[in-house]
Image (cartoon, rainbow, N blue to C red; front, side):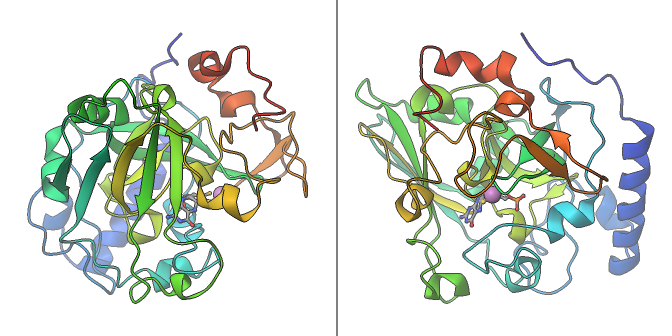
Length: 316
Ligand SMILES: Nc1nc2c(c(=O)[nH]1)N[C@H]1C(S)=C(S)[C@@H](COP(=O)(O)O)O[C@H]1N2
Ligand SMILES: [Mo]
């Protein structure tokens, strides 16, 4: 049932990585940074062009796929983060000044172990693995991104949800001074997302703290965000400050905004059109033409069983 493990890195990926590393070395003027592990936080959350700190990765995750990786510049330059802007190419610049240290993640609700976690504690709590995942936005573009993080399931186990907990709700930082998009009515703030507890416990669900060997850049959701690869991108909430275990299905920001367009489940599904466009195909960023969208974004063998017996046209 598991995805095939990639035995090595493809030559195309190696080229991409070398390219961006040498570019970054050039910017920083320091090769030492490249060699540094998970130490020293002087660069973290620092505004300006400070390069991202490298992350020490414990292992390559078993769920990694072997498709060509999207160029770093696209994955970090074409981002959705409405707290900063609805313009995908504007977020990178506008999010530079977001302070990601100190950062606290609060665990609340139906759990035996409610707790406020400091981000440093969280990052060091589990071995970090790299997982190359297909990434699909509801707007019909896709990427392939090497995320770095730890399984959400392991973290949830630590929280010890009670038997009453059916769903997990996630909340993004609310700070309109730092996040100018929150001064607009683009969405109902703060950004909220949710998962059924069994979805959240699925081994593919990742808490990402990095990508492409580095700490997460602000525009991609620093210091920690979800990555749920079988769902549309909007389920993968960025810059999380609160995890709450609840009995009832959380009302996410997107389902509040347009319930007829964005459902709670948001599983990638080529057979269910978005009211304003088809979901049958996608544009892979960096490629010519379009490709057919795969059921559950290609993760049907792994995650499909979570929805057996459900009408996926009704529960979109
Ligand atoms: N807090 C927050 N999380 C968010 C968003 C957002 O606007 N705010 N956008 C979502 C959408 S629509 C997508 S496609 C992905 C994009 O992630 P990426 O920019 O890292 O590729 O983040 C999701 N998480
Ligand atoms: Mo999206």
